[in-house]
Image (cartoon, rainbow, N blue to C red; front, side, top):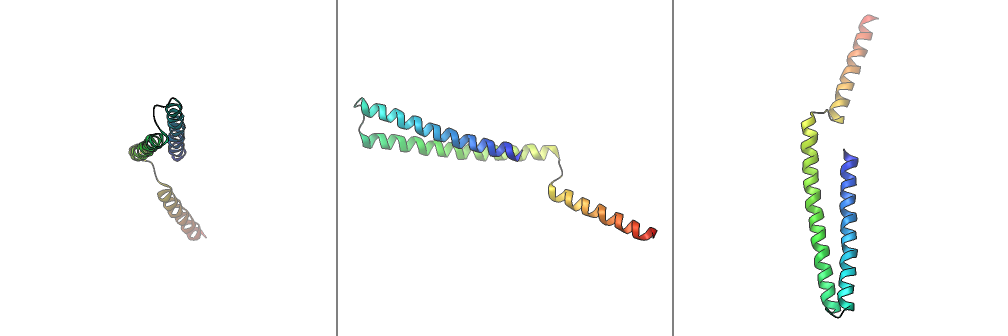
Length: 101
C-alpha cells in the first residue's frame, strides 16, 4: 500500500510538471501571436503552477486520509504489534524448553 501511495504522489508531481510545461507552451504561443507580453505570460504561468502545486498537495492529503481509512478497515496487525507478538511467543517457547529439561 505504501508503494501505491508513493506512486500516486509521484504521479501527481509528474502531472504538475506536465501542466507547467503545457502552461509555458500556451503562454509562449500567446506571446508569439502578440496577444500578451512576456510579463503577462510569466504571471499566467506562475499562477497556473501555483494552482497545480496547491491541487497536488490537496490530492496528496486526501489520498493519505483514504489510505489510512482503508488500512484501518482491514484491521491488520502493524509491524510493531507483530514483532511484539513474535517476541512474546518466542519467550514462551524458551520458558517451556527450560521447564522440560
